[in-house]
Length: 179
Image 1 (cartoon, helix red, strand yellow):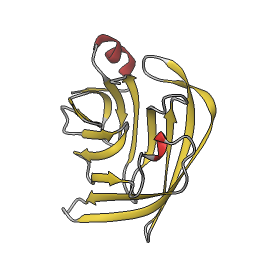
Image 2 (cartoon, rainbow, N blue to C red; image 1 turned 180 degrees about the horizontal axis):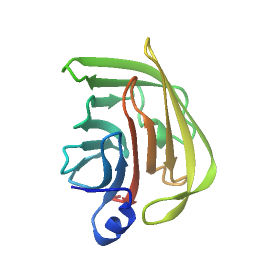
Image 3 (cartoon, rainbow, N blue to C red; image 1 turned 120 degrees about the horizontal axis):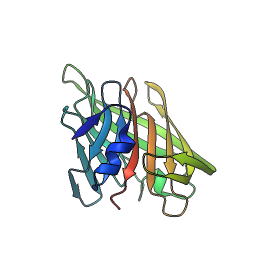
């Protein structure tokens, strides 16, 4: 379910379920948690967009012109945002293009986190740590993203960036948490 339009705060206040405010090139609105399985959460919309988060980070998409089929951090015990001081890490993402061709992207990422800053979310303003991710993809350029995480729990509250080479801009922020 997605409530279209930029004013997701009023929709989030009315709905007592875990929710994300989502914005892509073709979708904007509030997405309600559809299911959970272990560390995975599934966020479907009425318009055909679906996000899958793993441990709070973007894992897969459905309903975009290009879809992310999966995200892996080979050799890592936990995703980079769950580490207090992440080192350089490997990222592997599989993407299905508009013609159905699946491409495997492999890159080296860095995550630089700064001090706490005030971040407005749909239902609250929190002091969060802003982290900037840079992934240098083998033969496919560089992508960047911003994460906002709780400095104590390391839970992600927001994401804004490009997750794979030539991919769309995807932004989401937690309206009502599920954890």
